[in-house]
Length: 267
Image 1 (cartoon, helix red, strand yellow):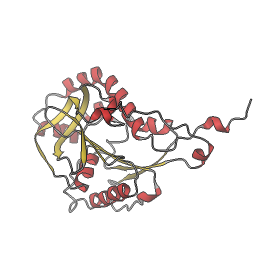
Image 2: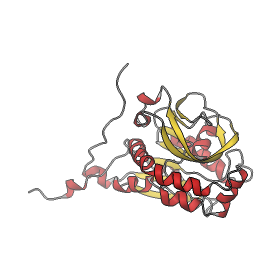
Image 3: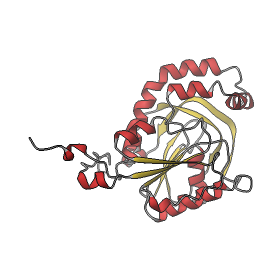
Image 4: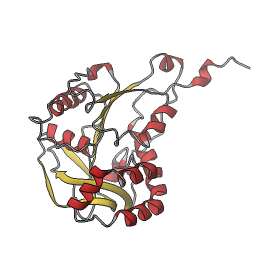
């Protein structure tokens, strides 16, 4: 078999600066922002447009105007389109993006929406995953442009009580002991990540203080575990942030990256 598909980023240039890549971000609650994705996007010079469906439930974004789509996490479930009609809008946008060969990244709820759009079943787990779990690469991970970075089990942060079946045609990339489908790719540019690689220590500690998230802890039978999760976070977050930057940078590689050096006068 051939080697890894990991590759270097594009060189960029003046034409790319004039046509900065635009990234559309679907957000569902203020507590779940881009996190570690934000500095990666800004360092690459991409323009970011948020659609916050909590504030704008009737928004009708046109995904064709953008170069990538990122769908973040939230408390909803993909089969609740009758309660949250914006979920149907989001899935239509995901479908349109894939048809137009626009890169799609779904995180937690976003991964479930991607799987559901592709015909995968979404269902409650036997037990919630909250806290730190070892993410294990599958046999297909080594040849994937993103998950070739996951060469051995790696602690990642989780916070979910639902999971999804791998959709037909999906490439299984990662699992944990308690949740088989943690990451997958569909076609060449669409990725679903059940885990929260985008979280940093500040965001995790904030979650542990919010009443809504404390209720999740109680529902999962882990109401007394906040202090232990906080300590585990302090120990594991450095490795997680490093992996997140590597994987997210690989996801963004198809997008043009402006190179400001081309604007400087010759010496």
